[in-house]
Image 1: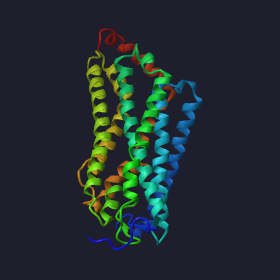
Image 2 (image 1 turned 90 degrees about the horizontal axis):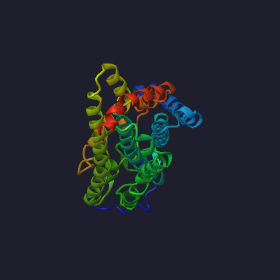
Image 3 (image 1 turned 180 degrees about the vertical axis):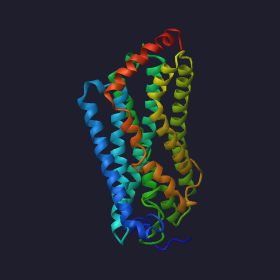
Image 4 (image 1 turned 60 degrees about the vertical axis):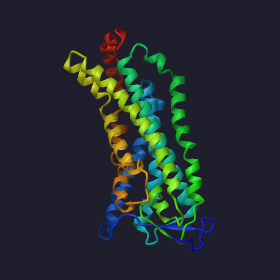
Length: 318
């Protein structure tokens, strides 16, 4: 396709296709998404406040959980408000600058979330398998540096691809992005130039972030499972698994959907079906199961008792 003269410098807006065939249920969906979005924001803000105010929750696990809540607030706020406004508007437009900004923050925050989930998996591994050394290994300074690395690990690598997308020539003013937000595949699909190199770059970056953090999480939980299976009592095994179940569920859903969407060489094809899978990673429906099931003061004392059960494994070199 030859360029039609509208380079990215002259592009002023895109149209967001949104969800397909929702004319009869538009207001109902708006009400549902608005309610859940507000509940999610409220819950996450309360979690951040509770972690900061309650001394019993000022431990590595809850520190990382507070960071995850902050990421959740930001990433849903990047996507959901614009989606809600499109439910009410006949003009589903988004400015070029707004689209590129949304693109950048979605991938920056998403990459940071992957890295943080991997760090949380390592934290659970150290807490369960090495309880005696855990306070030294996961000191406050170490936790802060790990959390900062997660945020920076998403902030900088996404800059290059974002600038590259912003400089692409787009063939039609007001072109329709076949999604409810400015995702990578649908945007590349609208470029009137060969985007193969950029798609390959996106694939490499996505693979490095997603697959490497997945391997860290898988290795951590593999060691946890082996350690838990060596606990003689059934109640001890149940307590051990209870400290990790919700986090493991989030990791499984999040990584599964992200691998389907982004760990593939070409993202410009099959854009009409990607919106359904993307709802898993952007929707405020399911991630709060991790956020709302963990922060309970009683869990801290249960964890302390659990550490005592694992002391024998730690001293035996488990």
